[in-house]
Length: 382
Image (cartoon, rainbow, N blue to C red; front, top):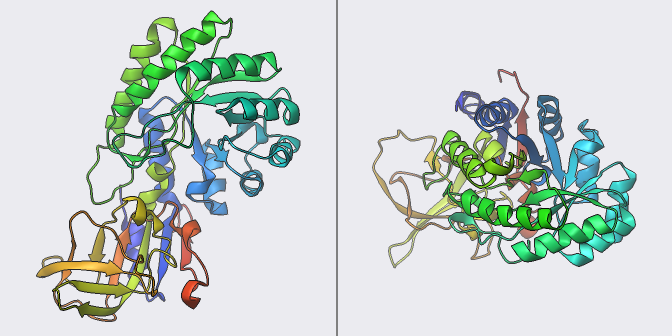
């Protein structure tokens, strides 16, 4: 996928730290996914809530997934019809359910008896998708434990929802963010098939499989291409559901659509070598003001030195942000390597920061404002 527009933009004289998001590149990723996976795309607003991006995706045919009243408002403002909005966070207050229902949202994810009861009371007649648990094996950022239920409880919840006047249509799960193993969808689909049968035995016909998120961005650890994931998913769907008739599919790519469409540019503040031989590169964008918090969970970004040739001699370094917090440094299984002649004032490009970073950037910590985000509209030449 071409990054030419991003490269042209960062060649300009912009004050650091800043990030750039290329909407055109997001749309290209969207179209590539749709070409190989027969599923409705339901973009999670949390991954990148830029209003222009959301509007562009809606125009492209994407549905939106929300997790708060504010995200409901963002989705509606982007032109998304309420019937194409799903509230995927399975834990909500009564007021939040009512807020969304009053604005026309009719699809909600649930994973507990309590939430089914709340939905029946405050969003009567709504569609319910039951969330299954998954251990997140193979992912950089597992999402196990807090969300989802087992197969037995999922069937019970679906039948309970139907008995309360809701419309249980299917199942969803999350195989873990930045999932490196396409086979993990097979294990999730095997569990879903068991629920499918138990629901049918109870007189309920489910029709939808929401494949969740997990499609990766391009970070330091290599992953297969999107076509490989699509082939594995389609094969698994046919394996587990083909004999009974294929269900409708939805997929929720956040990172997989927007990560590679963004880059963060930071400037070196200092290069310091300590007595133990560790060289620290301190930059003006870190975990807090640069929104690179996902580094704490294992995400490792690709980083290049913009002001040095690609073949320059390098050395192992630890890359730190500008705050006085010792946690403000990028995690790395293997040390980052940057040019030996790197010095204060040089620029670094932190690639694939289009997902989450702009909204995770904190403000005011150590008196440092969050970095500026520039957005390149689809079709612009910058």
